[in-house]
Amino acid sequence: MSYDEKLAERVRAVLSKRRDVEEKKMFGGLCFMVSGHMCCGLTSTQFMVRVGPEQFAEALAQKHVRPMDFTGRPSKGMVYVDAAGLKTGAALAKWVQRGVEFATSLPAKKKR
Image (cartoon, rainbow, N blue to C red; front, side):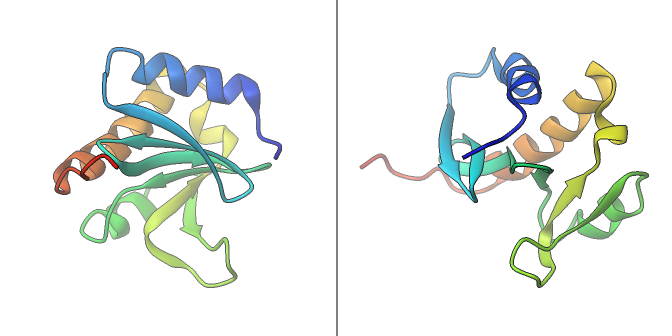
């Protein structure tokens, strides 16, 4: 599994104050889980954010964003954000926060 380790470290820094974050190897990369739900993640070439169906259109209206199409079919509620949209710490934090907001809007998963 390969992914941008520097970007992963930047995401970890954004999420560092939370106690409900887990990292899981998924999609051939790394996913960040909040309260048991996927928030965002990295593939070998992409940064993905789970924004949810209600925020999907608004997220797509932003620069440097496109639908996540990992399987060849767009996944409603998930977007890819290009590197140009993540240049600053504030820009990355904004996208990570969108993923956190959606993940925490879902019922907490029970630990196994």
